[in-house]
Image 1 (cartoon, rainbow, N blue to C red):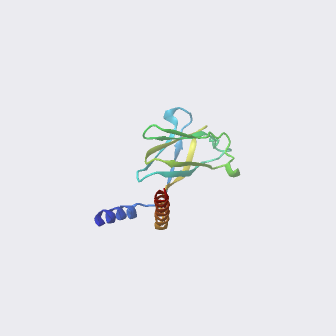
Image 2 (tube, one colour):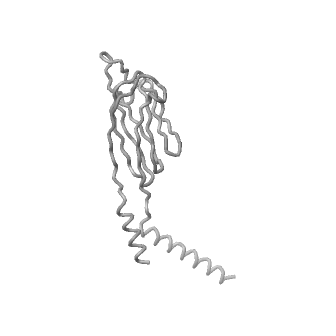
Image 3 (cartoon, rainbow, N blue to C red):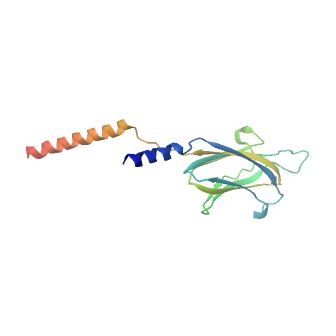
Amino acid sequence: MMKKLLAAALMLASTSVFATTATFSGHDPLGSSEAKTSKVTISYTAGNFDLSGVLDPSLRLLNETNSGLYNGLTLVSDADDTFTYSPIIFPLHDFDLTRYTFSFSNLAAGTYTLKFNLILGGNYTGNYTISPVTIPVPEPETYGMMLVGLGLMGTIALRRQKNR
């Protein structure tokens, strides 16, 4: 029994609960077909996680054809579950005209593809952060209080049964 507890404690201690950040960049071609949609692969297999990040198109309205605007952002899992982040026509989040933020909560472990399409194409950079979702573990005092409560309920039931 002690070996099983020790093995479980070691497995729990070996899992990482720290956030992981990664960056990506590239060029999104002009057009909105599937072949011209930018894709970023994200993989996390250690449990449920939250995903948040920033997409930063190179906004140069005067000397490039890139408008900095995009059609929206879609996250597709390896099980073909699709999560769509609302399409944004104008980049006005926090009054920052060059960055878009996104956030997906409590995703299951697996591989995901982040898809987006700049309306007029252009270069982009971005980053995303994977934050593991930790499950709260009750404190020993919680179990102690529960056992005391069950003991009191048993005592009350026993007394009532003796009084009849």
